[in-house]
Image (cartoon, rainbow, N blue to C red; front, side, top):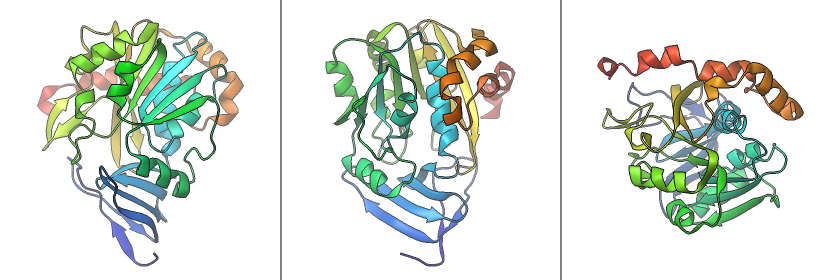
Length: 286
């Protein structure tokens, strides 16, 4: 479809924004949620679920590099990772840039995965023997999984989006389950902020993670296509991302640096800057 269209995402607490669309590849309802994949001259091809932009060709690398590589810097020779969600497959593609690691990739919505493979230029197109895909419920998968993971990433929609598919994965019970499935120095990455009708339900150091993990660090980065500052949380059973040196990060990413567009030893410290979060966590701001 081509024409003079304008996409206006919903669900934004601080107002609405939009951009022109010159081609629509798919729009409709999957078995679980509403999905749009379209192209804009502004942000390139993008994915929206329940009318909220999830990723775009323009800046997908900022999001996916940020949720993968800071965690990988804290792990010594990681062997296993689990991704819950992440239908584009791009998170899995970032993880396997590092040698010697295998990934369990669990996506609940087959339609999202298949349409992303077909239409999103930055999706993971080719099958890779290091990535084992499961279509199913991430919670059930984790409950039944064997062995331990070095890294678990919840690459999810907002808990309070219209489909509410991921709400169960923002709870103390789930945090304890994640912890039990991580190695002794394992790392967990999840969304660090969320709102229901404009009211914050989980913030930068979510209560459901406290008392479960040794280290809880918020991190943040700006997504131009989203027009929003993304807030994520790194929860660790071992190392602190603020106590790893720039030299160590530079050495660890050296073999893959040519394949990175955003993350490096300097952006690592920028996205974890504690002085920024001391302001954001002021409750009067909400």
